[in-house]
Length: 181
Ligand code: SF4
Image (spheres, rainbow, N blue to C red):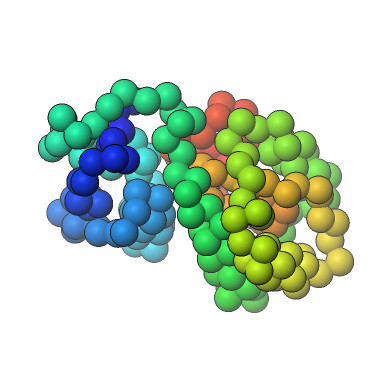
């Protein structure tokens, strides 16, 4: 896959199919923004990461380079993204639906062996403490399956995500990912 060279400046923006232009301050945020926009407006999920990089690299061929999928995962601000994701779940707590413990356990086992996991806790101790508290708050007395790393593809905290009954998503996810559509 061709992706923007992080050492060169390229405007972080994407023109969606309905001609809406999304702008963000990082590629990770742009991917999230497009994903959330489509979900909120009941549009087909598509594959935001792939579509964004394809469009940007088409527009700026000399500022892109070939990279492996894993090396482009946006992990630089993972701690912020995960904390925000957990905080958003607290906000929507009243509407959240949970799966049963055996399903959550199976999902956690898949996540624990996944190549997309990345460490994030050391980047911000305060963020980690806050996320721990919020995850416990949302899960109540449900089991927290041991997982100190975060999902770099979805920027989610698997301790909480494995319990949630959320729609599957399309995108650049490993073949055995339980979130993959
Ligand atoms: S949600 Fe999917 S991509 Fe993310 S860590 Fe779990 S298995 Fe891997």
